[in-house]
Image (tube, rainbow over all chains, first blue to last red; front, top):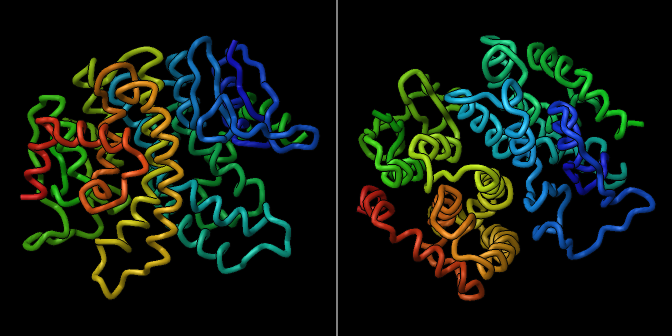
Length: 202
Length: 202
């Protein structure tokens, strides 16, 4: 049984979605910032003091996107392809972490996450400007194939779509990127995604 | 034959080191910002307009750390371990990309990379403060084992050490982190690392 430490309102959502896609049994060990939960500091489960963390038998992992790679590897193809396509999955997962997520957060914190009085419009704009550059790259890629790797949904799509889920749900202007918008619509309404989103969105 | 597009003065250094560790034949296709080379824009080889990129037959990859995972996977164990240790490699590689590199760059640009007149001391200090927090996590991990994953050098060490190579070489204060310092000394003076460094440091 996979144990996902976190709550669906945190990045643990990503791992819940992955477990749902993999069809693997899992439980969520509630740990987070929702009412009624207190974040234990320091977190014995993660030296970075962050959620999520995954327990899978003796293995304890941090980094949500790496947890998802692990879950996908357990499920095997098609969620985790083999050969060169496995390398392409790593490429897009690293790209998500290094080129996309920081800009998503910069925009998100200042567009809808922080209390309105604390939002800084110029920060939201800077995040959007940087994210738009990456979405333009993605738009060109998705003009060539329906999913990031091969012809079907893989954990590469999951890892990128789960990071773009916040913008997608909270009014980010995707009109200049119709292929990205359609791909996100497809990914984020998959049955497994809907089951994970229900835990988060209620 | 692996084709590494870039120059040793760029992040292509990381992939050169990986190819040297893997013992795989490679060539460097010069593309970069060194005197005598002009960076073609847009870069046909990488939709992100960045170096490095890897060509391995029909496979073209971007993201330096993902390229290294691909090279290590070709070499197999011990550079790329199997099973749960493979997942730990992904964890540390993602951690490098999401928790470490941006702070390394923020410090580096303002400590030694930009012309002196353009450096902003407060930016260097902010980068150092954030990086120190991550190095403290790493210090505790390296108190428990000699390398990041298992008992020997893997691509997880390579991927983190290649990102910390700039600070290590350029006067970052590692005195509070003696285990990190010793581990970097070991990684960055491996024969394969020295061969790659020679191409960069001259």
